[in-house]
Amino acid sequence: MKLPFPLAEEPDEILRETGRKLFAGEVDFLKGVVAMSGLPADDRIEVCFAGRSNVGKSSLINAITGRKALARASNTPGRTQEINYFTLGEERYLVDLPGYGYANAPVNVVEKWQALLKQYLSGRASLRRAFVLVDSRHGIKTVDEEIMTLLDKSAVAFQVVLTKADKIKPSQYDRLLAQVREKLAKHPAAYPELVLTSSEKGDGIATLRSIIAGIG
Image (cartoon, rainbow, N blue to C red):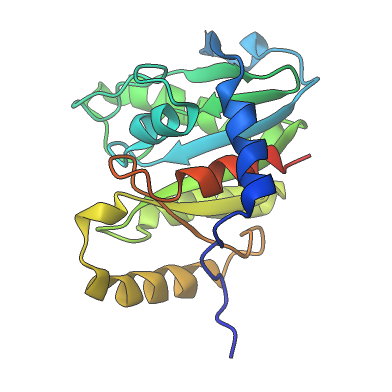
């Protein structure tokens, strides 16, 4: 019996090298956007990273790009209040979205950037896939499902990336994966494959790079 939402397989040598080359090339910060009017032209393939505050999004982006400080990691959840655009080669944008859920900021500021997040996810024609980051220690939470439901309604394919896999015991993987699979079964826009990662250990990084390189 084949499980729904299997873990992505390790890429073969060709796919691994394709992913490595993409991220070994030019990866530069382009701009931070605070309103839809500030978005760059939608003339490139875009992939975006979304996740709850403190899910390890900045650390993961730094790991896959091989740049230690490309995305700003912070001990203060909710620091990223803009949509941050990075050029990935000459044909792609990598987009770092504001963290959702708890944020150490005034309510009106939180509401403003949460509205921007929803506008972007529902109205960006060049967005090919959203990577929704889920903390392996906690599984999918209600705030994650809210974003997933928005992506369903917007017909934007999203793929769950489990972060901080090194923070749980191997014996806990089955329970985590069962919870994630059960939740994802309700979401038609969910891409049928999971990626298990650890920014610290490097687990899943080559896999994620090859997936992004293969999105056309």
